[in-house]
Image 1 (tube, rainbow, N blue to C red):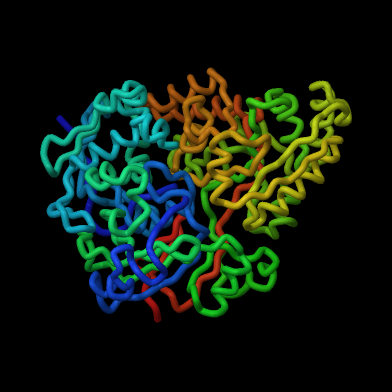
Image 2 (tube, rainbow, N blue to C red):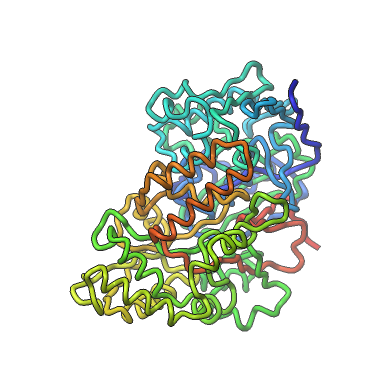
Length: 557
């Protein structure tokens, strides 16, 4: 007998998460020469035309290749996964109207909605999910999220080695998608909301290769909106997708993502009315803005941290990493430098992330298990003394003989001031640090390639389970930019992933986090929030704790 998880209907929204460059076409036109206003008019009438700023040109908006939050915000408006989220952050039906789970927890059967279409009007079937998930697993795709999203599916190891047909996903008919797991996964329903699990259209991807996502004519999607224009360095415009199953509920006519990296330029565009919402608010303006109704400070499940390249000296020395990690005043960063827009990180997994018991907190359980926090956020001097001792034990008393080091970051938000603070803080250890500022479009691929010594890092959760961030530090993770590797951590995280016992799942995660913190795999700094400006007359949008904005249901008073 199967236990049925019929997801009651209701509505809306699209997939999720995580980046950069490309595009074609002249400003004001689509690639085939159609005026963009005409293209939008051909898709819908009477809706709102909204312009927003959430970042610069993305590295990629291919769901399988993306790993950044700004591109994810674009992807979630164009694509929809099997399940998705509503404005209360509840998992709701997406492309699947219901699903069944077998009694042993190993087989998920998803029942797709009637009459699903791609944005070009062609039929959408379960086979599209089969193709897309196998493409995600294919080593030739080099998807950064492949292991994180698919490793619990039967046959993943073989698929990752090149035999993609070994991945146990199938479509017995056009409306049924079946997934077989290698072991129970207590958070699988959360995983499938992730943007990397969005379907892509086989014929256009195979015809265009890695160019498919760069032009409106080939960026065929299945979500609320569809791309009608991309002018690199200027904007990406989406329009209502008349072929979306819930198109009648979409209130937007067009959504224009204005592409900017400079927060002052974004603020100027907001002041002049060019955009109605900006994510990048100049930090120097916050004191004057923070009490206005249009300024929003929203919590998100996220940790900002510093990444060490553990493959390069002297960062392959755990005592060096621990020393640098302890020699940071996290309260100063959060409360003074960031003016209260963040919270000092006392641990790695922060507040808002659940533990085994309903209503519990992973961070609070960590604190109880460990007899306190990993960092003395209220007693920085004590941690600094430990740091000096560790650096001496590593062979660098007072920094003597320690080589000059380089910190890489992009210049957005508080990134540069934090880099300057770290430069000063580590000078207290006798260490000289240079700062390398690079553009966002260069930063993410350089970091992923491991071409750095120390760099800025951070993670916004894709779903409410600590494994989502802890799994970044498995040896096999495509998002493990610092190349940290510990077989004990790998083993614990694999065991946490495969158990159907919730208590055991979280216990393994706690053990893994403790080892990672003792290894100083990274240096947590703050639990970050999103702060942004949005015109008060814009209604019907919402922000999720995963760092996404939902604009497809926006209206204007």
